Length: 117
Image (cartoon, rainbow, N blue to C red; front, side, top):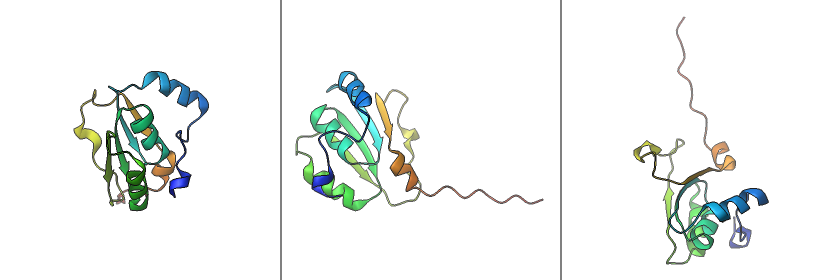
C-alpha cells in the first residue's frame, strides 16, 4: 500500500458508507481489524475514536504518515499469528466493530489438536 492507495472513503459498498455516515459521530468508538482507508476515514471524516489492529508494519507506517496529529486513531501493531485478546473490552466499549475480511485471510487458522483414538 502506498499513500496513493488510501482513498477518501473506506473499501465498503456505497450503502454501507451511507449508513456509517449517519450512524457514526464524533462520540462514537470504532474498533477495526485491518487498517487502511477506513482508519483514515473514521478518524478524519467521522472524527470518531478508532482502535485499529494491523499486522503489517508497512501499513501502520503509511497510515500514521497520513493521519493528522489531532486524529483520535490508535493503531495497535501485532506480530502474532493470532490477534490480541479483545475480550478485555466491555460489551459497550465500541459502537461499531469492523472486521476486514482481507485481514482475517492473513491470519493462519489455529491448528486443531490431534485426537487419540
